[in-house]
Length: 94
Image 1 (cartoon, rainbow, N blue to C red):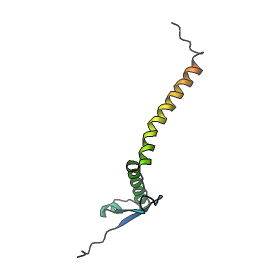
Image 2 (cartoon, helix red, strand yellow):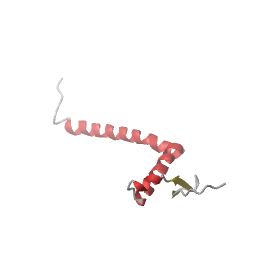
Image 3 (cartoon, rainbow, N blue to C red):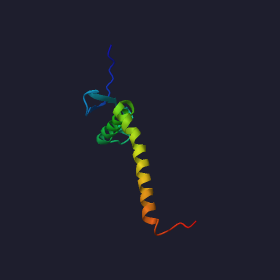
């Protein structure tokens, strides 16, 4: 039995069809009443879909694990450059 309720949906196409074809989001009735434009709703749906992929796929988990490693290496490189550049200017005397 089909009830006479109309719902608005947002369909986000997948950039990688190996995993899934599309994601379907059911829009709350008050979403558009609160002043959200169609572009904002679509952008938010894409962000949610991308966040899901980062959490659930092996490639996303690897990418998420590499970000802290990259920032650690960048910090170490900056600290080393600082010591090398500023060491002769401010020598440490023991």
